[in-house]
Image (cartoon, rainbow, N blue to C red; front, side, top):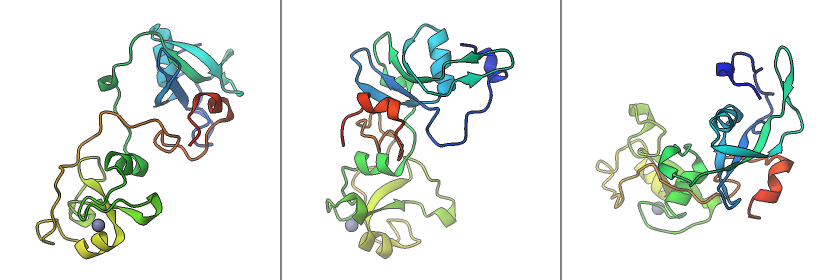
Length: 186
Ligand SMILES: [Zn+2]
């Protein structure tokens, strides 16, 4: 494989997720999805070993390299090294599928995302500004802050340190076939 700061490696194919890499811990449990570039870097640093490769290799000017599909950490997992990607599913998981305003626990389909500081007032889409809300609460709050709407947030939203690795939490709708052996079935 070749790193050279990515300049010699072609852009990945556009199909989403197909060139991402599933990171396993030492005991072969799925941890998270990282970019294949990151996986290659980690492999060069001796931090991971390649477990499976994507079908399509990475082409560079002079040769081709296996694209890492699944890699396994050779050392202990230190979650604080990894920044958990913001995702709708991640927010719902963090909030335990519970509306943060009325505390109702609902199914994924009944839940929405609420920007605590509304988007049109500059509120970012981030772990710290987005919470799980049911539709009635979201509608009631509208373009207001919780204070203005006289609604209470008991828990200040934060970036989670850890999200269980369901397929959805890994941030993927479509899972590459070569990952299936490693993922829990849910
Ligand atoms: Zn609610």
